[in-house]
Length: 136
Ligand code: HEM
Image (tube, rainbow, N blue to C red):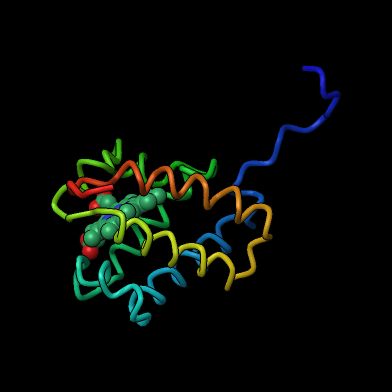
């Protein structure tokens, strides 16, 4: 390698502040989904209790961000797109999900440069989840 650095690059998991911060972020995300009128469109796709969703997203993001592969170890491959097919996801749903996650990251104090990076990655994933035909 040519950068001369001794240490490996920090993972996004480390950059956000590890397990405690990730849990805080996911809990905040679903709390917002549960209370913000602007997110009502995606709230209604979820079950009355958001507890399972909270635990699943926490476990999934742990691995996705470069931390422990909690979800894969317990459930195997997430097959996220297939798993979301029962829910009609278009641009509105994608944008609500992203808005909720951006707000959650901001509220729990993730550094702006890390947040910006993650917003891009979340957007690409959420956009790939779209499964509803709609006009451009
Ligand atoms: C694009 C908009 C999205 C919508 C509308 C949406 C909606 C949902 C819904 C309704 C569930 C079922 C939760 C329940 O059991 O009540 C779910 C599960 C889940 N979602 Fe999403 N989601 C979106 C995007 C994402 C993104 C971007 C990620 C990851 C970065 C993600 C990760 C997950 C995971 C890990 C689960 C649990 C899967 C399992 O059951 O094993 N979702 N989502």
